[in-house]
Amino acid sequence: MTDSFDVVIVGAGLGGIQMLHQVRQVGLTVRVFEAGSGAGGTWHWNRYPGARCDVESLEYSYQFSEELQQDWEWTRRYSSQPEILRYIDHVVERFDLDRDIRYHTRVEALTYDERAGRWTVRTEAGDEVVARFVIMATGCLSSANVPDIAGRETFAGEIHHTARWPKQPVDLSGKRVGVVGTGSSGVQAIPVIAQQAEELYVFQRTAAYTLPARDQPLDPELRAAVKADYAGFRARNSAMPTAGLSRYPTNPSSIFLVSAAEREAALEYFWGLGGPLVLRSFGDIMSDPRANELVSDFVRGKIRQIVRDPEVADLLSPKQPIGCKRVCIGTDYYETFNRPGVHLVDVASAPIEEITPDGIRTAAGSHALDVIVFATGFDAMTGALLGIDIRGRDSLSLKEMWSAGPRTYLGLGVPGFPNLFTMTGPGSPSVLTNMLVAIHQHATWIADCLQYLVDHDISVIEATHEAEDAWGMHVDEVAGKTLFPSCDSWYLGANIPGKKRVFMPLVGFPAYAKTCAEVAEGGYRGFALTRP
Figure 1 (cartoon, rainbow, N blue to C red):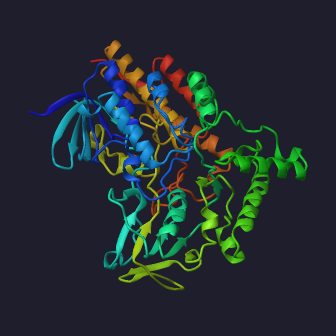
Figure 2 (figure 1 turned 180 degrees about the horizontal axis):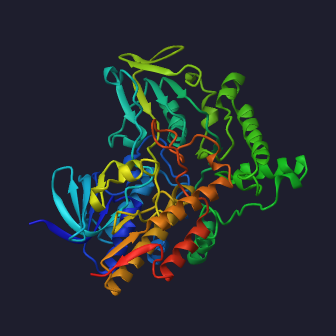
């Protein structure tokens, strides 16, 4: 007999864990399927050297339990992957979540039965369960992008991907290592690998802006102050466009209203604070190309000051506007290129042609390697969703539905896919915010919605095409007022060959959260509700 649940959640990352806790509070039966051997999502898989969160630890944490907030003690400004995984394990144990999670279970298909009003969930092993509601908590950065480079299978050494790093330690001492990719993962891994390897070759196609983390042990006074008013701290952060860092609000003034000396002093101040705060030094950095160029020039000047070889410094200096791609937060990244044995390989001018048994060959020559590390990121926001064969009404596939690019209503629902919720999906702020705030807002909204459906005897909820179309235009309109769409980035899917380029996240958390609340208060307008 097929098991039946009120709710199935796909994914036991940070989103799936909170969603499980909140679905239980509604009183519904629930099962979570997780492909990995444990909970944690991105923090379960990304175990590479130097892996660390780029959101401050006091903010990158759950807010659904005051006791949890008070009891847990973060140790550093930015938490490392092992510390975050310990936190996740603690949460799972504290709230007895494991009993509803099935690990080592990858979902391969979801099929909607319109007559029964139920989803059939099929796993890779061929097992099936039935559920009234399905919540996709598959994560925005979970589908690893492994580049299709000729000859990969011929390489005689080890190949690793930062997003699928082995649990057991990888010994890189005395080895020639090649790192392909210089996004966030590469920026974190490269300085640590350089300390271990005999020779390190960094294969860079596009330089990324890397701002100093200034990581340090967490200030006990700051921790105590936040814990004394965690509710206020959370509320102030949620009022920020990125849902975080309310202690350092953006200077609303234009960069052109100050003198060159005042501008330089402001940029130096925010550079010294560390993290992404340089982008908060003036209010027009992400809307005026001329303002952006002044800040970009400032950061490029810092790179030239740090990197001793002028040619290497020039290659490491990004040409695109700062912030249009995700800004990296690193420790000693640029300093690493002053180390003997660290080589920057420009694959923009001389692309990688093949992987050979001995290493990597570019158009300019060959590089002998013992280990290759792909730090090539993810098929962001849609990769994990489209990796599952999801079929809604009339067997319409989500892949078909999104062939011209992903479209949703509020990032939560898709027309033709009843009772299916997409946590932090395309069309929501998600990756442009502190993800834990985005997760909290979505988990709470979905749980409240489920409670409403139960209380009002509503069997089906489904986003309308009209609402989806209007929302898609809204997402495009808001993005068009910024510099975010001005360069090829994974926000648009530009890192995945053949992927339709659509700006996927919504800019601005507070207005979005207000809209979601108004939709709920209005009886879930924009959704069609059906009673049995």
